[in-house]
Amino acid sequence: MIKVLIADDHALIRKGLKQLLDDTDDMRVTGEAETGIQAIKMAKEGDFNVILLDISMPDKQGVEVLKQLKDDHPQTPVLMLSMHPEEQYALRSMKSGAAGYLNKQSAPAQLVTAIRQVAKGKKYISSELAEQLADGLSQGYQELAHQTLSNREYQTLCLLAQGKKLSEMAEIMSLSPKTISVYRSRLLEKMKLKTNAEAIHYAINNHLIE
Image (cartoon, rainbow, N blue to C red):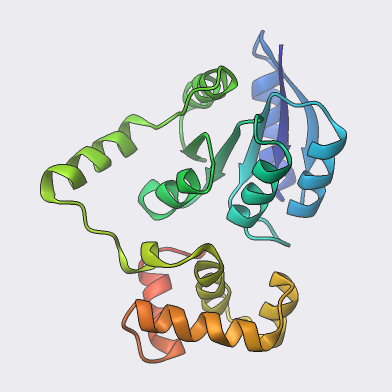
């Protein structure tokens, strides 16, 4: 039996996922978390074979939660779920230790297949993402500007695009406002942007925020 922890801040999505997986013979949802911190705590206290993690958590950015989960439980596969197109987050998630990445609009059968695959210790890449990667390789793959950022710089960009103030960003990321300013300067330099407004415009155009 594959024991699954679902971490998603939307109760309806958790309910739908739980119903789908509990109706599958070899799976059971044995834990539900609605925040990133709760997911990290439950993963420490429980015994799970697979963790389903929404990339847009309310308290900690999904990739940060992923990194903490992988530090604490390197053997437990984490399957990322998102409303965002795969080209925006999949590579960053996989580089940070995710076993796979699925868009929430994927077919239920695809999710079940992905869970079974990562539970066996394999990686899961959808046919859509595999095709994009193959196209990128054949054309000489070029990273998008935001893909050159570190996870902290990327998180700063996303929070900036959400309209968060420096003090709010510092609190969310548990860092000093001065450190956040450094990340902001670095991301603007790496992405060859001059102002916050340009960064926000880029994030919206590239669907980096919901």
